[in-house]
Amino acid sequence: MIDPESAPFTGFPDRAVAAVIPAAFFTELIPIIDTDAELTVTLHLLWRTARGTAPPYVPVRLLLEDRTLMAGLRLRHPDGVRALIDGLSRATRRGTVIATRTIVEGREEDVVAPNTARGRRALHEVPAVAARFLENPPPPAEDAPGVEEEILALYERNIGLLQPILVEELRQAAAEFPAEWIREAFAEAMAYNRRNWRYVKRILERWAANGRYADTSPGKRTRKDPDSSTRGWTQTYRPGERLPDL
Image (cartoon, rainbow, N blue to C red; front, side, top):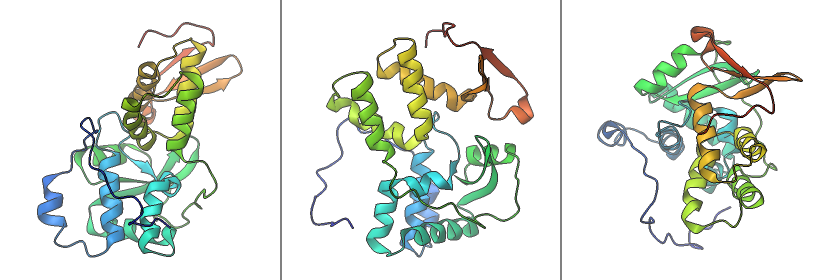
């Protein structure tokens, strides 16, 4: 458990990444949200989906795997998983968070989004596959390495010595994108000898906007739009072909 007295906050850095929080959160929701779990998960979702390049919704599985979020919940609740589910359930009943169950990368998952215009559009477009949200929440991956630690290690292993100025940006990417995407984006960049973070970041942003590359056969990969059920297009390429410059 985190000791709040052990590491005093030293202040926000000059170049900290900012997140836009709707004004209505402070004027309408702060006075009525009555549990810290609901407040925590609502703020986390608003922050996690705030940037235009971030996915507009988040699988609950990724929230359970977020070590920072879960550590904050466990600071005040013995059962962090129950606190997360309770906070999400309260937020969905209040209407600040919307949720559904859909198919994410080939498997059925509960996904949540802030009740913003972007979140509503995103969940309206995904096909729902079950009526009840969080009927069987996924178990947390307690022993899995944190995404934040992994992206820092990937940078140093593939690009070089980590510069302090990049740490905050890498942490933001770890919060925005699934760990599997981050690993594959680094691998993609290294395959084309693009050993710089800017190239890796552009791959992630492109996947968030247009869909992630997925193998469809031993000799071919397909980039599929995540909304292909409504837009219906794919773009194919063969391994070894040169990707366009990002």
